Length: 230
Image 1 (cartoon, rainbow, N blue to C red):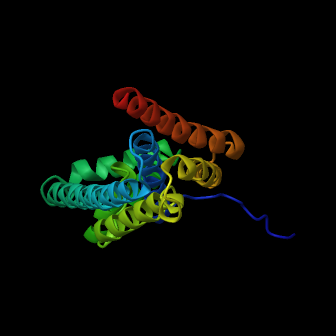
Image 2 (tube, one colour):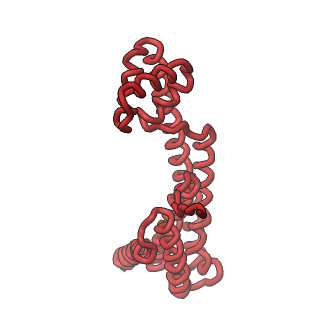
Image 3 (cartoon, rainbow, N blue to C red):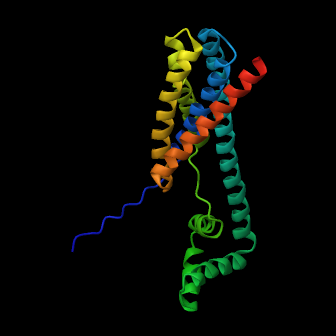
């Protein structure tokens, strides 16, 4: 019998970080450029402001990713120290917790006792087991914080330059805005499609949802700029 291939699409940390960075990178500079298009007469001002926003935004997003990664690592280490202390000081209670895990799996009481006693002979594996099956915590990549910061920040920069391309090539903000809308909305649709595929959502409806969010943000910024600017 041929093995049955299981087609499960799993979102990695890298893909998650790309989604976070690219999502904001496409939307925020797009809304900023659209808003300024309703208030200024020179594309160079929009490009300057857009680049400044991309730099600031990528640093802020990257720092947020770094802090999130460090928080995850620090939380894991704190919980592991606590679990290590409990294994040393109250081993019988920890064995009972092991037995409860296997009881939930439907194993017989005799097997629960045997497995708990066997697992207790290796404290490192015992602690690993408790971290994973009692606390539902996986050991994070030690370089996760740095990788996350670079991935999110880099994705923000890539996404942020997409809506600025027409302003780099055209002097008229109103003319550039039209091209920027077309290019950015297409990119938002494509990005939303793959984002939805990765997260297991309906790809077409997800693509339209992401595109609509970007369009509404840009339209609101443009309208406010026109209103304030008179």
